[in-house]
Image (cartoon, helix red, strand yellow):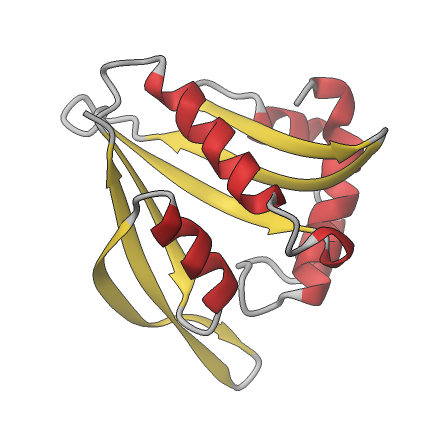
Length: 161
């Protein structure tokens, strides 16, 4: 993804937050207050990058990588904010996005493991992650609260080396 794609990312992330409120922390109102410049800083800061998927010119999915900052934790990275537009689900886009992200992370041998958290209700995403080699290592009860509903998240890890 390029910096020029920040507006498309902003719009697709808003769709993600609106359609999947149990999967994303911010509310639509909170996201609408984020500027494109803030999105660029968020996406293209030090130790972070985003993989995007496109159908022609239209962004249809994304996933963000974020590396830990502390000197004792720099061997770890996180997959965050994964989303594929509903119109493109079931076609392998999520697997391709996460696979490309993993391949990019593997170019840095100092990153030894990738972690993520996924709502236990999200069987499709869990299947993708398990298929790519992630293994569960814990359950966080009430990780998010969307209105009156709590969402438990399963934590997963992939050892790269």
